[in-house]
Length: 236
Image 1 (cartoon, helix red, strand yellow):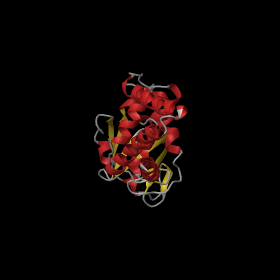
Image 2: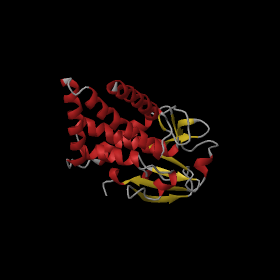
Image 3: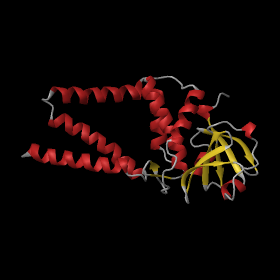
Image 4: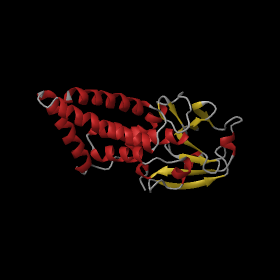
């Protein structure tokens, strides 16, 4: 009877975790539930199927890998490699719908898009090169939410000011690097530069779109902008 009850609770934990994991809007409670759900799934599987050797070995392996990611130093990712991974990740959200507070393919907002580009880029490099430092950086950005204004104000020391410009339409492309960000509207909105006079952003009206400068009748490109850069993608 006790095992049957535990199995029901374990299945419930799986369902809840899947729901909160795919739910596009992320806030502290959702992150807490997601992390707590994965821990419950792992612990429940270990208890329920301890006598099943493949399950037991898999659960122990997951624990050891998690410990390694947390403790093994790792290496600093090459800025150019990270920038390329960030740009690739950003473009994969092209066409997704806008959802305020969203951070995924089911819906995303302007700061969520910028963060997902950096998070996905770090994750892809971390998994591909077995670099725990990259995975820790990705988790740090996932766990510490922020607004467009936060990204423009340093975001826990992870971004830096490049310059202030009168408008994005008038910004000198020679001073921009792919991956740079522009905070506009007094911190209301943020865009990322893809290079070749193209910016990507999650616009409340049209979703994730690419915009070529000079933009036509786009208010974001006609107001003062704060250009910032990820420190992890900066050689200086």
